[in-house]
Length: 371
Ligand SMILES: [Zn+2]
Picture 1 (cartoon, rainbow, N blue to C red):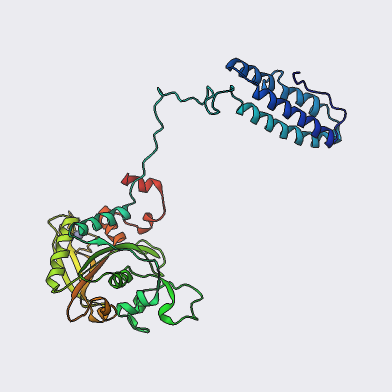
Picture 2 (cartoon, rainbow, N blue to C red):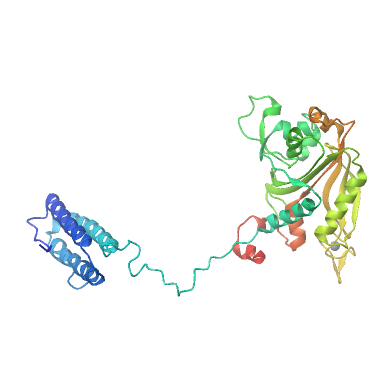
């Protein structure tokens, strides 16, 4: 027998409960009995039709007819019931058809597909990939390591002894609660990608040629040229008979590949604990062509000098090899050169961006320029 909305004997919770359950049961039974598209339409009209559908009748009989003090309770229950009935009606389908292949859901293959926007490489990541590719062509492989490092790998193994003043130049972020541990085991956020040099030499015997892209952290307040998180690209070549000439030739070639064949390189003495001798490498300003001027204006990126400092490098300090001597790195037998540069700074220069923070704010209007 077809369901019809019953008059309630009262508006008690129990009575509403009983009537609602009966209604849901009837609706579910009718939903499973649908055999054709026309029956499906009739079923939907009967239950949720706006003019005299069952839900409309329930609203009139059970809710509008309720005495004042029972209105609230009846309202809640009728709403619950409506949600359940609507769910049943929406889920109903012609028996034998798959749910999901009702007329509304059937695929119309004549319609155009959904176009999903393709993302773009972030300018810093793009710069890193391009620089890494330059070294990969020279036979370097990519090495990786943890961002949370021990004091040993970040400092001691790289010839920064405890209390050495060179540690002060790297405003380090330490992990809290490490005071109980011996100093070399204390955890910190790596301040450079150089720990990966040591980790790689522990795992692989010479010769090695690796390039290490990665994030590093220092306690620098964010401004137009600083960020507590930034990116480095570092490299290391170790073999027998590696000389400073190999270093200069390799880096000069890499800079010409990256910035264009017209750039010149210049090496100036510097200091790093893990290299001896150490150098800073400059490239001739690729913005003003080395003239220091852009038309009538001074060239700001090179501070009118015609040169831009790009990276630090040098020959591996024998003390660094001492720690990995057991794996074939006898400083009397092998030599090598590391180099490291800031990927963010290179991206700033390359794309003419004047504020480092723009790279990390995630503003799509800014990032879309690389799409
Ligand atoms: Zn310039």
